[in-house]
Length: 333
Image (cartoon, rainbow, N blue to C red):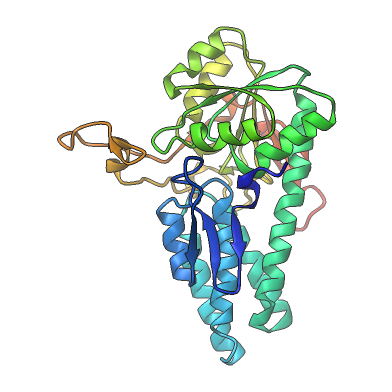
């Protein structure tokens, strides 16, 4: 069965349909974005999360291109480039959005025709799914049969492809999922997806991770990464750092997944950490969890130093955090 989140962004004749992950799985509502600007707003408002924004950006670029077809190419290309910057800036820590705009612009530039934006988006979609499948296969190889995996805010294709690959290898996995405050992505997205795939899944609060790692029940900590720098720092949903440190303390390997380390980020100095409105931590699923008299603080991501990272799993294989240059061996920089 295809998990719902694996196909949660769809291009239609009317616009881009995006599954509202803020309500999933209790409600399965779709938000129709008719313009690229509406797609950008949906990403900023957390309508879609995890790898959802990547696909939303691909097809948001197509929406903009549709409005430019009557213009001379130079004018159309300039406006499409402005839209690319708008979409990229919706979630600045994750460089996947830049990759989404790049693949669309490459197709447009090669043809000197904005109607080729759709071809670029389809190639970006295909490429992301293929890389996720390869990454999942490499990850599954690292996990022993009957492994218990702890994860944090891990959903979409990296997750589903890892589970599929493990199942194809004849392995049975068991998962502990953190809730992942404040949006509860782990409780609502990760856990629900695992259940859809028939996986034994246990939910814990974010504060329980170290205790579960200490218990000896966990064989591996596995998360996605929003970005991995060339010197091996893993940037991911806030809370990952604490789990990685605890895993290191208790001898549990931490496998971080990313399609590719980022050549534009030699170090963390090139990575902007997104800070969201602190008011978001004062509520859970729309209900207050604290009075408005207190202040909230919400760095959306944290940075795990390479000494706490066992390895980085990419579409091309598994690399130690200190040897990520090998990913690009043989390529022109």
